[in-house]
Image 1 (cartoon, helix red, strand yellow):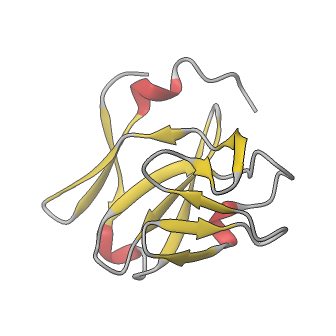
Image 2 (cartoon, rainbow, N blue to C red):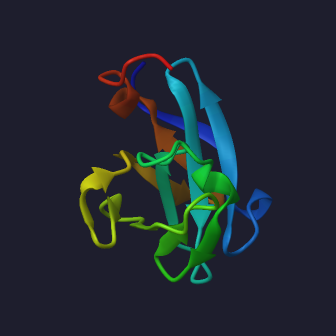
Amino acid sequence: MTGWTDIGALADIPQRGARVVKTSRGCIAVFRTGADEVYALDDACPHKGGPLSEGIVHGASVTCPLHNRVFDFATGAAQGADTEVATTYPVKVEGGRLLLDLAALADRSAA
């Protein structure tokens, strides 16, 4: 896998919402904040495996729907839990389209 791949329109994700992108290496949750910033994290919470894409988006964070752990979009780190970090992936918007850097998935083991 190499380079940026178009995964859809920014408009396909509601503000403070998420979309799941299925890859051969597992699911990635792509989030849109209220300020139209986009972030991508592993969809599985590192604590209990909950679907982060179903969590509540607030500011630049998401709250896991299973246990209310809050993850920072920029770093993937959980508030108050030094060892819980969700893997982050490069994502950007160009011309209203979302682009995910699939080269970043190369080091990830298959789900």
